[in-house]
Image 1: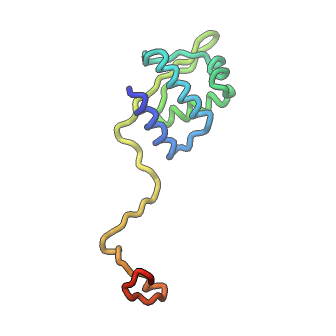
Image 2: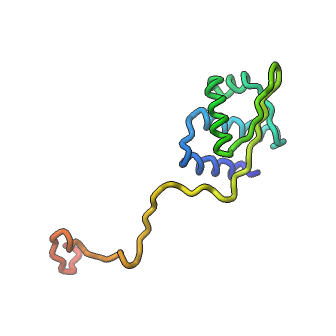
Image 3: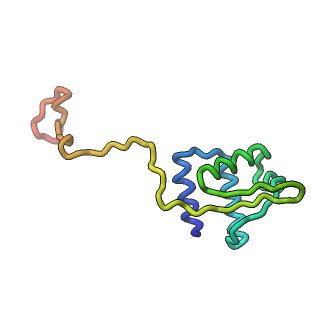
Length: 130
């Protein structure tokens, strides 16, 4: 896994998903933890410690990790009780990204005609000063 590719994938998905500050902060904090642990796979981290270190509320943490999971950026297994930490996994980017919903118009040769202001009532003489 390449850190640059993970960041690039996050920002590409952010254009479509519009991640909140909590979601962004959580994802990059998880990237930091994964890098610090030499990308060992699963990262175990207590929710209370995550709330304190990522500086977000417990409810914000829960909703942020759900949104990141739905965007297929992370996987996680919640802790089951006292002293059982939540396990996080950074997922590799999909090779086939979702297409953007942006409407991109492309020029066609047939529609690209030079009118030089003829439609606006200008008299075209071929001079640079028209």
